[in-house]
Image 1: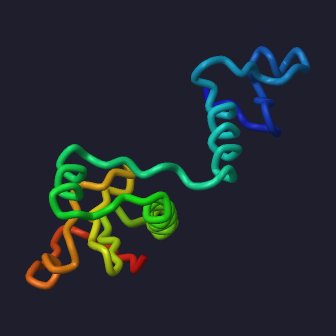
Image 2 (image 1 turned 45 degrees about the vertical axis):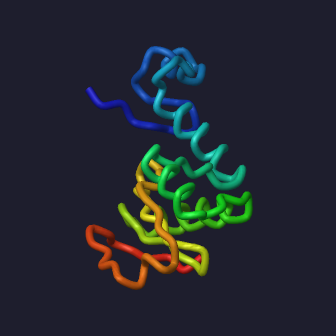
Length: 129
């Protein structure tokens, strides 16, 4: 049977709702998890992770991963999530970053010079940093 949601933490038809108390917040409780996600959403952007490959490429290509750049990448991931993108190209004058949005992970990076001769495939969005 599918229970109906009456309000925050209350489910019609469940034992706890029948007794007049809110549904429990046990591990795995969807309502509690949703509230936690909504609470953390307003606390700023989630950090962007780099794959080992991307870190190695950034180091060998001299791309400095400054806090400002990391904030800009995190912001681009957030914007791409809102638009429903899965893989984006984020770029500025320092380099280009291919980012997998669901995992918030930079897959690879390249310098501005390398961007000139490349074709970017398997992306569904681009963000100018």
